[in-house]
Image 1: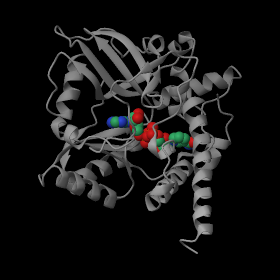
Image 2: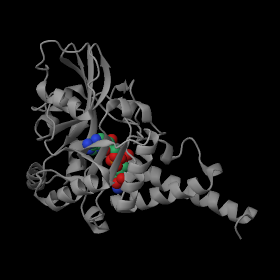
Image 3: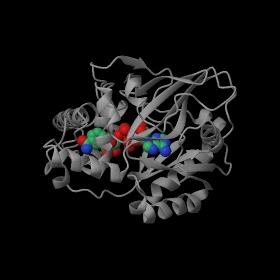
Image 4: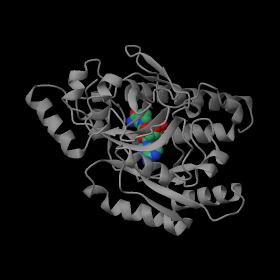
Length: 337
Ligand code: NAD
C-alpha cells in the first residue's frame, strides 16, 4: 500500500494524532508540573513521531513538538526573553548511539581526537541566572526556550545560589544555565509533610522541584529545600570566554556557584562508556536523581563551530539510562497541579 494516497493519508493522520497526544503530555508535564504518563511512554511516542518525520519530511510542521523545546510559559509569570536560547539535548540510549555521536563530531571537527566533558544529567528543571556586575538580577525558567518565566523572587530563596558573585572583577553580564533540583531525602520529607497536612503528594523529585519553583507565592518556595547545579553558559559580556567546558565550570566554582563534582574529561568510545557505566553503578547511591549522563565537546571553540539544530546543540549528547518506572507509579498517585 505504500505510496498510495490512502497510505499517505494514514501517515498524516498518525503524525497528527502523535502530535496532539505529545502536546497534551507536554502541557501536563511542563505547565502543570504533573505528568500523566511515565517518561518512557512519552519518549516512545516522541521517537515514533521523529522517525515518521524523518522518513516523510513532508509531514514535518514548524509547530511539531519535535521542532520545539519544552512548553508554553505560564501567563501568571512575567515573561523573560532568552537572548541565547535555552535548548533541549539530543538523546542516545545505546553504545551505538554514543559511537555514532563521537564519529560524527570527530569528522565534523576535522578528524581530530575529541575531548569531551562528561557530566551528570540532572533530573530537575532548567533555570537561567542572570548576573550583572556580579549581582543576581534575574532568574528565569526555560519555558519554550525563547521565552521563560520570571522566577527571580523564588530563586532568591535558594540558599546555595549567591546573590552576589565572589569575584572582584565580575563580568558586565553573566548568564549561568543550570538545573534546580530537589534531593531525594528532601523530596521524601516534603511528601511526608504533604501527607500529614492532607495535601497532595508529588510524583517525583523533578516535579516537586518544578512545582516548588513555579509558585506565585515565594514563601512556599522558601519552605521547600531546593538546590542548584550549574552546567552551562548563556549570555556573557565583558570578559573573554574560557577555552573549555571544564574551565567554564571551574570559573563558576571560583565565583561561588554550585557545580556538581561528578564530571570528567574523557575521549573515545571507551572513555565515554567508562564514565556512563561508573555513574550507572553508583546511580542509586547519589543523593539526587539523574536520568543519564551528558557528553559535551570540551573545547568551547569546537562547541561554537558545531552549533545547533532546531531544538538542541549538536555538540552534546544525553546518554540516558534505560527506563525504570512503570505506569502505576504515575497514575497511582494523586498528583499535585
Ligand atoms: P531532556 O530533559 O531530556 O534534556 C534537556 C534538559 O536536560 C536541559 O534543558 C537541562 O534542563 C537538562 N540537563 C540536566 N543536566 C544537564 C547537563 N549536565 N547539561 C545540560 N543540560 C542538562 O529534554 P527536555 O526537552 O527537557 O524533556 C524531554 C524529556 O522530558 C523526555 O525525555 C521525557 O522523558 C520528559 N517528558 C516527559 C513527559 C511526560 O508526560 N512524562 C512530558 C514531557 C517531557
